[in-house]
Image (cartoon, rainbow, N blue to C red; front, side):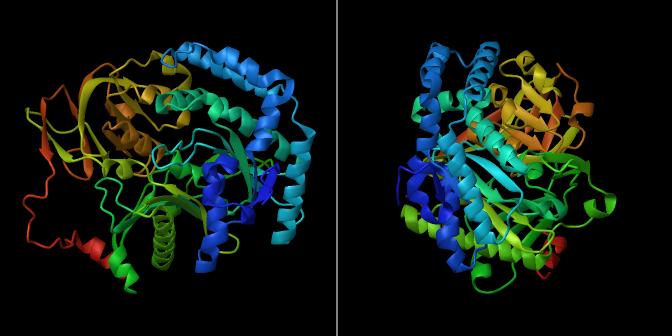
Length: 507
């Protein structure tokens, strides 16, 4: 492989090439190159390299201008962060796009078209940071992805925007929090043909239970349309849990399934490029977006992907995987896979924390899906407009419709998070787990029921259902050290949860 190239096909890169093509594209190449032979249907594509990004940085003194701009920045000053981020992005977008990179990208597009048998086709343009998707830092959603990109000019413009997105407010803040030097991180760009899930469904799956960390389950979330609606928490998704050991024996162990509201879906825009949001019709809301055999197929692929990455890592490696169904061909695809980060780090802890309410309380104001098992209390801050993030105070409880990566600078200041939409794999849930704060998603009406400025308690310590109570309710935290001194003789067994759950296993 010529590592000096500006563009490499996915067949030329693998998991060991993070420094060259970023975490996302290294994983995309690994999936396509290694997992397709095992029957996993991954998507072909190509990636720009870190050399292309450095060529842009060297143009017109761009790197020195950015270094001067960032000197002394306090990322906790949201006004200053917004000013610096905006100026940084403008510097990149106003720096001419190098012709050598443009030519390499367009040549890669032509080669990709020859491989898939198409001359003109829509593509997804995905950002891939060279410090991304590492076991201790997910960088999830920190840079931009553009969907349904059509034509040479739009492709180059989208790539230029991807480079600029390395300098969004959230990306600057996140790198600082994780201890990465801004100039030790480069950006690559992955280009793939679009899977037409706009006319079918898509979602996310984890090869463990995201709340307990139980590793013998595959958790699958899905909703109608493009997957961004699930990732960003726009839609409350359908959910399935598949038991791995029985699946590997050839059975059909869908042990739970929950019908999501699936309020909206993301589809191709009417003007031919980009995307738009549409309401989901009632008939689609009231049925699952996947059949049972499709759920099992995805779970089998998830196990194959986890086994492959675990073998590479030399230890068990849970995975966070995005999938999509093509509404034209009816085929399922794996879009990307990254190491799961939260429970991988928790495995190193030698204690268990148990939270419990110790004070009196009335009926919950609102309920939803509990994320984690903690409790938080404080003043509610109902916030619906991303332009007003600066009004959010440290220690307040964020109550909103949904979050996306633009909200992250204030999420790390919150004592808890409550959203009206989303499931256990949405952006709010993932980030709250990373931050170690309680979060309740999919409440449906939290912004209507909770008054801004009122004292509330957010409890994720009462099972799968999260409860929000009025008032600042006392709670206790018990910490128990984990030792090997006394081990129970009782074998762990699987509990029959409900008749609905059992019947779903037979579908």
